[in-house]
Structures are given as structure tokens and as C-alpha cells.
Image (cartoon, rainbow, N blue to C red; front, side):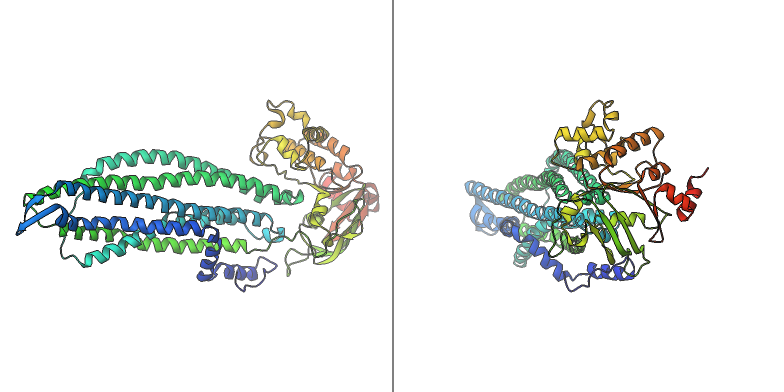
Length: 609
């Protein structure tokens, strides 16, 4: 979108400048992009505009009434005193006027509904594209944004566009046509007469009350659907590492699309009711107008009022007052919608994670030997290095514990293996192949992740285990659950594996959530298992059950553990002591203690009584 610079590599002033430029895209370019997005709906929009012209002209038909009465209904012979009234012609005139209003109201409904459908369908498509786009952003870019900022784009900014295309645009077309036609008519009239329609007020009040009750029910349903949508969105945004580690971008896109379509249907029901209300009320008002016309004619026949040109003038003036009051509102709505659209397009212009580099190779049968060769990494191009020439190897069948003080680079190391981030120097190999050159599906398909803070989705226990491999059978899910000691607590739940875990697993204990995460990893059957200390904040019973499960699944795999507990460190076949982004010591627990180096000092500080 325009010739804007590439995204800087940090969150400092350079990124802020880029962000500001991206936000201030020219209004004309935003309009062009909106028109491009609306191209699939141009047929409906053109038909809607035609209906809008019909609906806008329909009110001005009433301005023809005085002339019809003077020439077709009331006959004069001398002066201004009528000599006869053609009642048959009167009813014909009234019927034609009523028919014109029915046609206008139907055209207005059609125009409003078609415009709203096209606009909301376009915005629903933008919403789905934004979701898929954010879900595919590289973590280095994703981490620069606050989740609330994304949520604002999805709700507030798209909401501004929704209001403009669903409400303001349809009404502006109609009132503009009405304003122009009425203004032309007023020029030809010299004086006016007051018209009062208070007689229809009670009926209109009853109709409004009934519609409001229907709209309230439908709106509640729509709000429930948008709550589901927001909940799904928040889950995925806060679980990006799990989604990416298990390559569930397509699955999440489809799941979001289902909730998105449900919201679209509910919102269109609200729109249908809102747009039906105005034509019904307008029809009632038109009946009141006809009744007043009949009474006015009787008054004219009795010689008690002036000729009816005054009625036409007041009618024309009344038709111009409302549009004049609303033009400023419409323009404000469209200005806010353009701001919202520019912010939406700014999200769609952000770079996404490249699945495969040019010439990417498929991984053969994976053994699981991981090597870091002089790897250098910093989260910002001009920021301090997190890894400075880090070199180490983690071979298949080894359980490698990463130990070191806070900030040493342990989490960065495990995040580089599945290519969540790319190092600025050196390379990482898997079975001798640089992971930067392989297909991402192959790489992440060989890896499973069990984070320290277990991240579950708001589904059943079975659904969360199956997330590791969506095509797994029920029997395979049960086997993984037994190996991870999930069956131990599921047996006590009334709904078993169909128990809802709640958002982020809030209905389960920490140990139960950890065991489900381990079962999910077991079901994936990875060659490389990454564990961020699975027992660091659990009670002794939960810790024992999880350690039992780990003893069953670790053999034969390459396992990387960010270790905090002594029991975990002792289980490791190799310990990498990391400090200031470099490998300081390597060996077993006993050997490193015997050497009396940095690891021994950390052990004495943290674990000695």
C-alpha cells in the first residue's frame, strides 16, 4: 500500500515511524482499495443504487397532490369557490399516491438490505482475511503488537466501516435524491401551509414497541455470536506458539470462519428487522397522509381554506429539512469509516511468515540430531545479543537439560529450533541439513512443544489432545491419554473425555492441564520434544504423575528441557550450562558438580539446603 519502507527490526522509534506512515495512507488510496474490495458486489450495489433512486423519488410524488386535486378532483367555475368534487377521481388519486409510497418503501427496503448485505459481506471477508493474516505473521513481527491492538482493529475499526456501509450509505442515497427533487419543486411554489400528522402517533408507537422487542432478541443473539468470535480470536492470539508448532493455521482459519459466518447470519437478522421497521412506519404515515388529504378536500369544498399549493410547498420544505440535518452526520460517518479502513488495511499489509524459502528441500526420515553452529541472535537488529556464538549439539535419544541463570538464552534456543525466529548469524542443522533451507511443514511436523504455562483451547479434553494430530482416531487419543496419565483424573469426570475444559483450561488444575499438553505431544509422535519445565509449579502428586509420563515418552527422542527442578536435571543425559548467550559447560549432572565450575555454583545456590 504505497511506497512505504520495510518493517524495521525493532520496536523503537524506527518502527514507530514506519507504523505512523502506514497509518497515514492517503485517503484516495484507501478509497481505491475499498472499491477493489467491493468489486465482487458491484452488481448488487448497482441494483441497490437504482432502488435508492426510486425510494428517494417516491416522497416527492406527494408534491404532485395539490395539482392533481386542482385539476382532477375539485372543479371551479367562478373564483375560488369549488362547484363540484369528483369523488371517484379522488379515490383514484389517493390509490395512485398510496401505490407510489408502497413501491418507494419496497425499493427503500431492497436498497438498504442489498447495500447492507454487500457491505457486511465485504467486511466479513476482510475480518476473515485479517484473522488468517495475523495468524500467519512471523512471531518476530507478532510480538511487536499488543493483543489488545489487534482486538481493536477487529472490533472498533471494522465497526466503523460496518456502520457506514450498513446504515449511512443507504440512507444518504435516498435522502440525497429526495433533497434534490424537493428543492426543485420548492422553487416553483410561492407560499406554504402547515400539515400535522399527529393522528398516526399512537399506531406508530405500538409498531415501534413491537419491533423493538424483536430487535432486542435478535441483537442479543448477535452479541452472543460476536462474543464467541472474540473468544476464539483471543485464544488463538494468545496461543500462537502452539498453533505454529503444530501447524494449525489452516485449522484455526476454518474454525474461525465457522464462527464468523454464524455472526454474519445473526447480524443480518438484526439488519433485516431494523430495515423493515422504517418502511412499515412510513406506510402507516402514508395512510395518515391520505386521510388528511380527504379532510382537507372537504374543507376546501366548504370554502374554509386556501388553495392547495400551500400544501405542496410545505411538503417540499419538510422533505428538505431532514436531509440537510443528516448530511453532516453522513460525512462524519464516512470520514470515521475511512480511518477504520486505513487501519484495517495496515494490518493486511504487515508481512507474514514465509512457509518455505526458495528451493526449500523436503526432510528425509528424521533421526533427530540437532546442532547449533556459532549461532548469533538478537530480538532487535540493533539490540543486545541474546546468543553470541552459541555452539552445541543435541543428539537423538538424548535428554538435554538447558540450565543457566535467567536471561541466559535458554528460551531463545528452543524457539530457534522450530524456526519461530531466524538467527542473524551461524546456522542450526537437523540431521546435517540447515533448517533455514527445509520445508516448514516437515520441520515443525517433527517437533512437539509442551510449554511451562499450558495453553488449552475452549473445547473438550479429547479435542485438546487431538490438536496434536487432527486425523487421530479415538483409540489413538485414548492411548496418548493413558501414556500421559490423563486417564487417571478423567475417570472421575461425569462426561469423561467430553468434559469442557473452559477458556485456557480454567476448569482444570495445573497438573491436569500439563498432562493434557503432554498427551497432545505424545499423539504427535515427534522426533524432537521441547519441554519448558513441565513440573515447576505443581504439587508433588501431579509432579510424580507427569514424571512417570515423561519417563515413558522421552526414550528414543531428542528432548530439550528448560530445567528448573533438580529432579529434571538429574534425569537429563546431558546438561548444557548457558550463560550470557554462550555455552559454558557440558556434561552430566555428577560430572559437572565434580568439576566445580559455574554449574556447580548455580546448583549450590539454588538447590543446596
